[in-house]
Length: 76
Ligand code: TRP
Image (cartoon, rainbow, N blue to C red):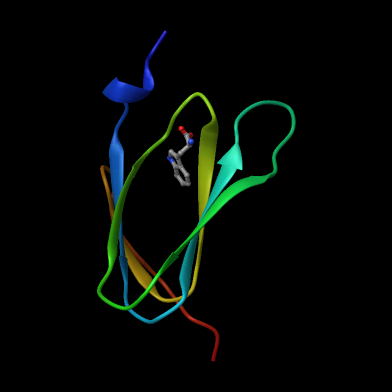
């Protein structure tokens, strides 16, 4: 069993106000369980845990992960 404290971190850096970082539940039921709002320049450091299997980012942000960097786009 891999524990949350050992799991990798991702870093989300908001490039505009109101970026949402949404945590999705682990298990058969995939639903939102947490939404964090970041304003421009704010950074969130998060792990994947026994409760969180996926993260959705809404808005313009840079994500730094073990797999590289990706940029999400804001709505035009
Ligand atoms: N209580 C949540 C958990 O332990 C907190 C959390 C961890 C979270 N990683 C996240 C919330 C990523 C949103 C996005 O799973």
